[in-house]
Amino acid sequence: MEKRVGIAAIFHETNTYASRTSLGDFSIQRGEEINTLNKHTRTYIGGMLAGCDDERLEAVPLFYAEATPSGKIERCAYEQMKAELLSLVQDANLDGLLLPIHGAGVSEEIDSVEGDLCEALKEALPPGFPVVATLDLHGNLEARLGQFCSALFAGRFNPHVDQFERGWEAAKCIGAMLRSELVPEAYVEQIPFQFPPVPTSLPVFVALDELCQAAEARPGVLAARIMHGFPFADIPAAGASVCVTTDSAVTSAEALAKEIASAFWQQRENVRVSRYSAQGAVNAALNCSGERVLINEFSDNTGGGAPGDGTHLLRALLDSGVSACFSHVFDKETVAQAAKAGVGAVIDVRLGGKTNPMHGDPIVARAEVMAVGNGRFTVKSNMGTGETIDLGLLTTLRIGSMDIIVSSGRRQTLDDGWFIKAGVDIEQYPVVALKSSQHFRAYFGTRFSKIFTADPPGISSADLSCFPRQKKTRHVWPLDTDATYPQECSAEK
Image (tube, rainbow, N blue to C red; front, side, top):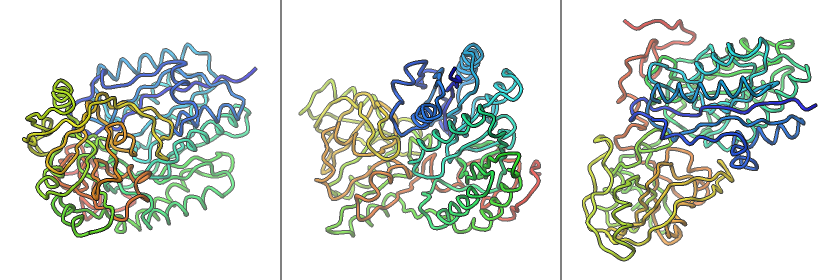
């Protein structure tokens, strides 16, 4: 008889400086729907389903809740989802459990959703029950997570193009556990280091990944991974870490994690973000005559919890008079106004700037409605290939020499799918602008000769010094230049 392996998770990357996240903000998949939406996709769950097939395990999809990164999850919403997940897991007659969790989830009064959920699962399940989790590279991991899970498989790359592989190796691990081939040990080593999202193509991370791969070639090492952490969270565990899983009979996960963490700490000054002001990025683009240029808006990245309706970069582009297209501004009101007026109409808009004054004032202008359409499409980027994303109703507005996509849903721009759905051909513009910190690079990185990062004020800014840290319990570099590693975590005075 095939062993039954459940798949269940609550997946959220929480920016504690953003507006609260309600139950209605979550997309919840249950049972066979999880199979339908994720099989053959390059996602964590897609990898888990494929890995279970390879291991001849019966995958039992139970519950998966995910929301676009945003503020703290309302306590009642989290407790309701947690209770349903626990009930389904306990009633499913499982032999093991796979958890496609993030690592940076925060609820009201709970600084680590993943730690709380995994602790509850450990208490509810029999001793020694196999629980294997995948983790996003940007998880803020509490050390105790390694005590609640049998094994942890964190992502290696940013953009996250390896989600499928991480899900697949998690399923392979649980298969080996169920055949009694190994008893894994997971360990998390925290590092007092915070930095904004950066691509793993930076030389420092290429070298660190090579170090981790060399470690994984050692006997008994199943996974050795660098965790970047998520800096837009005011919680004690915010920051980088190293996550290691080994065969406990062969080698120590703790010793290896500390070894890699020491090497990571020594390289901390080599982790940097190259960025401009909004006007600086536009000026740099204007100086690239004859080249195709992309500008990404780092500080208003919905993938980092920002609202997606910031106007700083958009205003600078409009003021410059450059011919450009922009994806996209989150503004339900303006989409509804354009849809009511219809294609070809000229309307007076107050575009964006409706959520957070830090992100700029609304753009007040006359705009021609160029298109109105459906924002549902299938991802073709190497990050999440095959996943279905729905931005709701879209409109394209022409203001001056710019075509601006406006959405009624929040997601960062991953590939040209939204441009196509909005009737915008990016090949026709010398400058393309979009809202994303890093994930856009998986698709657009090789398609433009120049990329300039704009980082005006915003709640996903690379300038970490602008975020208050009321819950910080340790000195963290570079916010505290006297931070050391290793160090004891103690309340600051």
